[in-house]
Length: 403
Length: 89
Image (cartoon, rainbow over all chains, first blue to last red; front, side, top):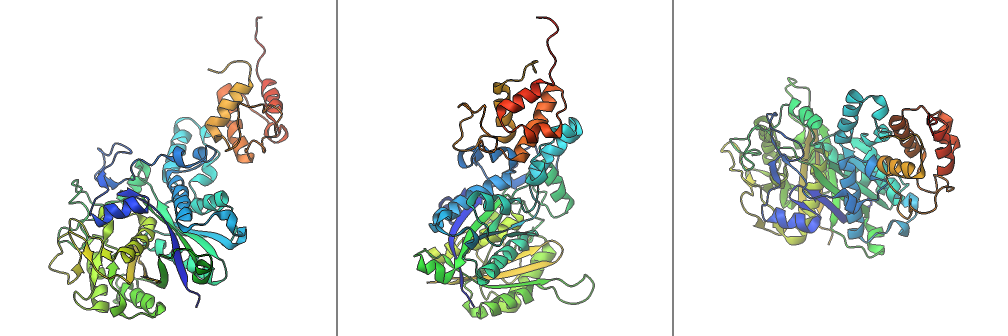
């Protein structure tokens, strides 16, 4: 099977923008979670989020794109520029049809949609932007990245939350194996606006704690839901041979992938996460002992933490593998979370360092070797990344050192 | 406040507000007879521009006003035919 590698990273996270700033923050345990500043959260039960600070779209994008793009699209376009520059790829270097775009999206352009709906109801239909026709749309990031960079190869979007971030990367790998040289993939999600916020509150999984260091505590006895964040990562994926031929720097290989769906509640059958892990390991032709660290989905809902801890323990044994959740520093980024975890895994491989899970004291209920408090130095050659979507989606990926 | 004449300055402002400026295009240059497409404005940008002109001037433009008037000069002339002539000189 064709090996597929990552050659470029474009990171936009609440605790750091750009791979360098993000990694410095993440290895140092610096949080990006704080009280919401993008709107006044005083009237809402949940008031914390991981917001990207200081992103000035006008500095990164041409004027024609600003009136027609949601914040998540603006960030995704900038992150794509960074990822392509990091990979040393100028879009003109390859044929249009050799490059495709596969992103994930959980909510589309919510903030853009909110502003246009407000105009519709307060001013009338003539005041709604013509660009609302596509600016809110799930596929808009793939479309705008494709147009801006002249990429006409296979493209699409996976509409799904956390697990969708890995599913998009897996689909990118599939397209490369079918013959496309390069796929821009990953996800940037952002919907920290009142409309997005009430939608997330309605999901019933948000933490209502208003202390940034106590609000998102996966695998802790005090776990009480999550803090949402915005951002994610855009990755450049290529055929390994093609990357080598053009002398590209290779971060690592997207080596294995598995996905399952949970059985119907009450069926008595076990949850699907363990099977997803086993499928990903088998796909990577790896044994549990080959995995140096697991990046957890880290729902911070006790029942889900239990399911995840049991799946990890079933495959690796009690405290059988280091586990971490750097997303404790960013909040859950929905479809952006897993691409960011994959980028973080590649940086962990590069440095030989496992970033910490912050603020968490592991509940006695779980038997995980959870890396808490401070980073841990370790030879990191292979990483298992887990992601679960609301409603029973489970995905797992193995990221491996390609050196 | 809308005035009773629609000028190139009005059009430039509305284009910038509604659709932005294409890289490499200077709206302050001599653009009166340049095709909108060359200025970087596709049909959706013109739809947005037409909507903003209608709102601001309280007029209704025919669908053809935006598809057939391919340059700023032609669109300005078309808009002005909808605007009232001042009652007193």
